[in-house]
Image (cartoon, rainbow over the protein chains, first blue to last red):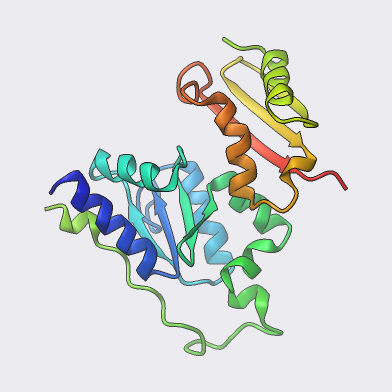
Length: 132
Length: 74
């Protein structure tokens, strides 16, 4: 797979998933403390998100950072826009902005939305699988 | 290796009106808080970019990590 193909898969993933996290490892097995912290905050907000592991191919990170003009991992996107990395996400989580920014049920509604009432959880991204 | 003082001066020189607080234990990892009216109306990502752009090419090199917090003066 060429660098350009990787880049268009990343762009497509950012466009197709309302909330998407590029991280080291997976939400179940994060491979870095910053990625783990970011996943934990998203899970606390009960907001569905897609996740892409950038570790299987160094070009994923290279192309992602070229697209986003952001040097570090993790990177959280919502509605096609970069929300930030771990520092920004933490700050927004702590002051209550993150739930609003992501339209998360845990912070936007009067009560926690019952299961099934919100949007279906996004399917996990398969860039790593498509790298062959 | 840049000192905390040097990092502070460069941020304050790079962003007019900015006030930076910089802490470091080892002169490669920096904790930085920047307060600037230039941040007004910008997303946090854009605020951080204003600061990070000052250190283009040094992050990951002479500066291993810069933990950044940005504030708009009230």
